[in-house]
Length: 247
Ligand code: CAA
Image 1 (tube, protein in one colour):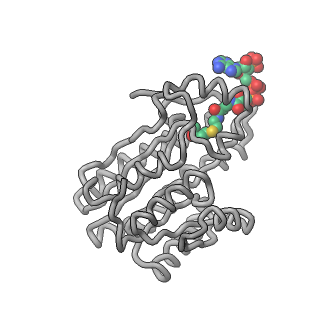
Image 2 (cartoon, protein in one colour):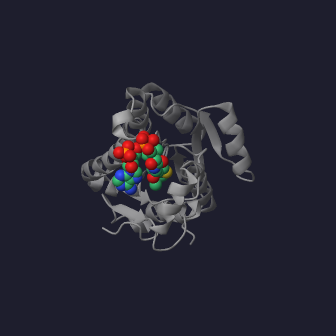
Image 3 (cartoon, protein in one colour):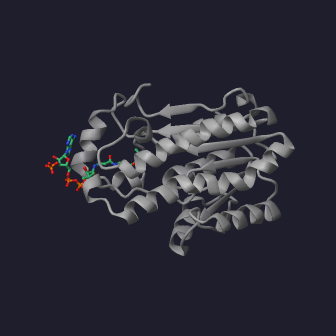
């Protein structure tokens, strides 16, 4: 599928990860100029390698930090242009059952996965409504929809993302800005490959399609939501989980 995003400027947070990089590539293939952030030089190198052949704009920014996000958005606007599309894809896991979970494990997942959505959206929303066009897409998870043993922190943050989506969608609906959630299931990325193999096999056995998803299968949903033709879809939570959880 090809969508025309010619002339659009997109920010994808977490572009150094598997799904984030696939989204960066897909939006660039559709014609957008794409900016993303990185946390460490090591992650930057890996992302540059994965994004070979693409002219991505990389900025060092910490999505857990409100001021860092402000500077990130300002730098993109100065170097690339006004932001039309924001994809909040930065996320981490710190899996463990609640009885063992530390305050640090809770805080780090909530700040990276949920606070980041506020920190980034807050700095782009005014420009989008002023210009009468915008797309904000929050990458949540099947585990935000159904919960997952060992992920009280992650499931809470991911469910929270969709609450944010539905509220902001109502605030900006009349201004040409849509806000949607995409909820991937288990996708073949480093994050999922970090789940112990025996547990991962049990999870795959519960997926009707019978395999892990591919990052590109999430990126095409995001691309579709960015299109002008998707203007009537807002406040939605679109699942792409191989049938693992049907709502
Ligand atoms: N149902 C009920 N109870 C279960 C169970 C199940 N399916 N599986 C395990 N348990 C029980 C165990 O028996 C144990 O109970 P007891 O102590 O009474 O025996 C308890 O749950 C687990 O205790 P542990 O001390 O072993 O748990 P832990 O704190 O070491 O955590 C875990 C284990 C890390 C959570 C491990 O189970 C795990 O990795 N699970 C996978 C979690 C997962 O799916 N993560 C997704 C990561 S990828 C991602 O998040 C991307 C995305 O969006 C999809």
